[in-house]
Image (tube, rainbow, N blue to C red; front, side, top):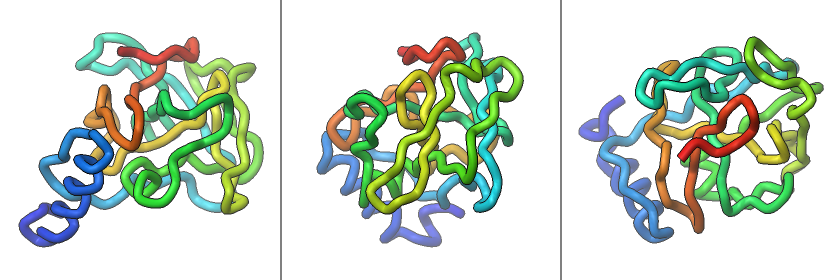
Length: 159
């Protein structure tokens, strides 16, 4: 969907990001599809063409991000933040796919009781503007009190 069809949504997202010190997205888009309820989430690695190195993705190849404002395994991204940066949720223990380190996978319970996947102690998120595998439009955005980075399979932020 394009912002010309939903101009109020594009404005709201731009306003929310700018109010929190972030970059304004150029178009509004629907949220990436998080894992379906009742299934464990798979975390894997895929080479990102733009960065030229492997990054973490979900089982569908969608890019995953960490938020530097999170401390420990607890998420600080709620309300409007979680609308733009949907948490990676799971039912059951997350699974390590190709290139991911099973020992770095974990979970944290959000304030609403949902279970979010962590990797190397960092809660994981999608970005609302990433629509297809390989999209990394959230890379380096400063919003909601901190920077957002893709992660390496070793669990480090790629800056």
